[in-house]
Length: 74
Image (cartoon, rainbow, N blue to C red; front, top):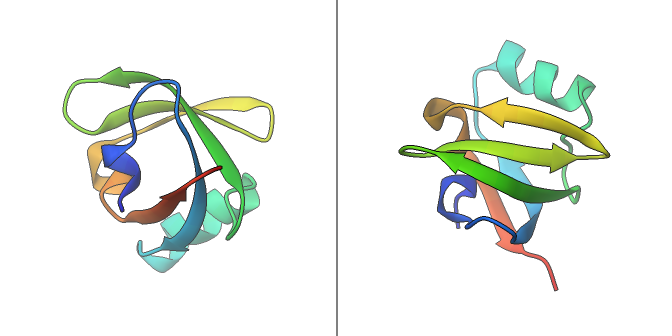
């Protein structure tokens, strides 16, 4: 499942990030690593998400969310 498919209020666990090296490294430095729980706070249009990650809010665009593989938490 892709992060772009998660609905508002749902939580998921990061399984794999398939982005260019520098972008992937940046997300990892912000705390988005394998087996990290992410909650979707809001959706803005097609695949753009506001997420909560380790207590901080982030906005991720469609090109990012379509390349982050997750599984539903719980």
